[in-house]
Length: 636
Image 1 (cartoon, one colour):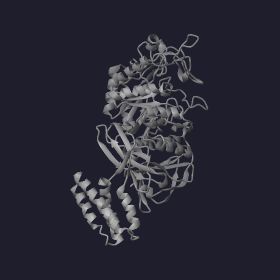
Image 2 (tube, helix red, strand yellow; image 1 turned 135 degrees about the vertical axis):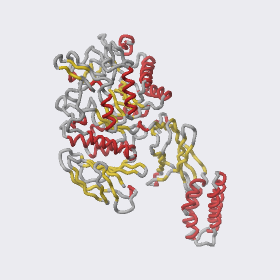
Image 3 (cartoon, rainbow, N blue to C red; image 1 turned 60 degrees about the horizontal axis):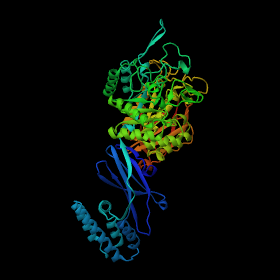
Image 4 (spheres, rainbow, N blue to C red; image 1 turned 180 degrees about the vertical axis):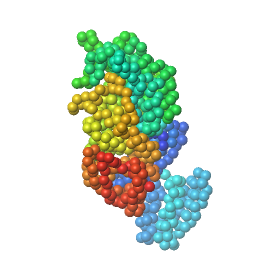
């Protein structure tokens, strides 16, 4: 339950989710517990809980799978279990010869009572079995025979379904919103349409922008690599006042396109398309082509404005005016964004709220169901709660992805109020201990409301781990992102090993695409196209990699390896990945075979990257090199 039930916990259709509670009672009689899951159409499903160790701390757990989207509720019911109480007494008294007649009499009464419940529920077969079993509880029989009758597997199942539940004590009903699966599981690819098909004329030293139509070829290539979502930076008109030049300079050359995040110009604002990219008809063709290829288009939703945005003229109260009479521009010291005005929500919140909703409805009407929200942590949290509630009412399939690189509590708060997923700290988690600690947090502590998306890079972030340009470093981060998180993302250029920083010690790209055209030859060698395509194919084939919660780290001696297992149902995948892009790493990996559901001393595995097969036991030698830095092993 999130904030006492103030916000809905998260799940997606078909996701296996845990519900845990502390359940206890006075006295010595047996206690039991169930989860009651109520679907949007009012259908109730009871799932019995299981006590966990240590029993003295009263932990109980059940795993459930919601099977439809929408607003669900769940509650936990604690209850007195007469049958479990009777079994406990029988197991103690019958072998000792104590109260045998009374024990049998009480057992027969419970079985007859349950048989009547089964009959009333429309199961005459179970009713007959229960009555027949009751007749077998004859005091003169040996104690071992009586216990065998009472503990038969079929009787346990019947009592679980129809047995008496007394002193039922429910919690409140807590909200659980079930989204479509893409809210959790997705592979994202980001590119700038203006760079796709952009051409440079050396004679005139001018660029011609790429368009939505010239970008359609890239859509096919992205789909071929197995991505689900194509994310576009802002596609709106760009301001000319204080326009930034190459590498974020203040002196743009003629024809420099400016930052797409400096939204708004004479051609319009957030409700307009940059004329260099085409018009709304061209955008609709782009979305239609993406849909044909099995891709969804995600748009950037950046609530800010260039000095040339119509909002600045029509609604100056939406911005902050400083004491010298100028409008405050955005800053993230030492970075300055003179070309961008932040929104001030204090003066006219009602006007801003409804304008944001109007803009979203416009793009939703053009087929956009996913929005990547720029800097949501700089806007009021209550605004996002209101906005996503409004959108959910008319289209619950719309998803919001938070670009919030900020403090943990703010990132969590955004998840609680409704953001479906978020960027994370993955970019800065590189060592074995860092990754294990962070993934444990994501999979067990914040999993009810905070869904991660592991982007390996962004236009703003050129990770230090990749700045050597070593292809093995790129492969390692791709494997980790694609297997640790159900959602991951790639910004174009990653597959070509782009790595040059703006300056030493800076996590920004030299010649950043944010400020210039960057057409690329994506077939140039070397590249990671084949590996990325293989990773996405593996993810689609394995439910274990499409979920967040069922993750176990495996024991290894070397801190240069990360080893873990993920499970969903009968699908288990084991990943062993080197963390050293420069040297070969050798070590032993320990497998907890019973935890993997393996009774024998060996398990058959297939490497989904290479097709090689192995038979492993409890301890297994692994050797990974920069050329082959990972195993992704399917438990056969």
